[in-house]
Image 1 (tube, rainbow, N blue to C red):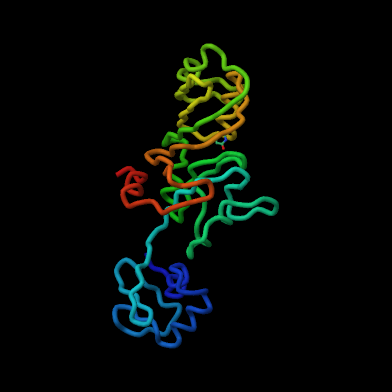
Image 2: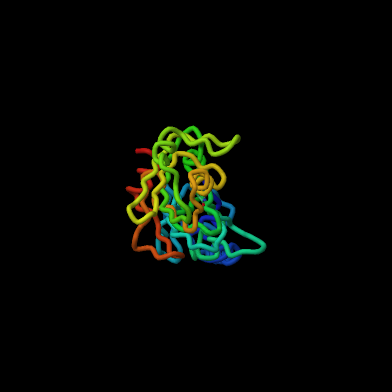
Length: 234
Ligand code: URA
């Protein structure tokens, strides 16, 4: 992928766009060993060696982060009223990143953040049926056939007939729900239809990814190469 030299350097944390323009103008930047002075030069970061003051930058081609979203944050880049998950993220390429889907403001757990639009789109496509596993605590009592109803495809209301999913109720009255879609408030609506009111919701898995148990709410880490490959279905 070809990108402007100043954007590449800024995205990789060398400085702001105007700072890197100055650095380039000063002759501190080389591409494949040659000094370049044009910020608008298009470079292929995967094929060229870009160095600043002799130090090669390891240009990241794509970014993938797993965040343990805390309750009280909005899954968006900006929000006029509430704190967003992006307020928690301190990475140089933050401006080009976005969330892969959303979790409700009061939901915790696994949220993916990336700059890869194509893969994100595919993961969210209703045709792909990417599974998501949630842990939920609830008040009230679930109806006796709840697991069977969910397995057969729950009719939540006139609008929402769910795909077959998996409900596991634990002995101490909590539940795990694994669904292969992402309709608006889906877990809460399914639980309500079954007789429970969700009081706590946390996403534990997204497709092949499992929330890293070392991440406290509000913490994040980059995905490993292996995890990225798994997400891409390889
Ligand atoms: N289902 C919900 O109801 N809320 C979420 O945040 C995610 C799934």
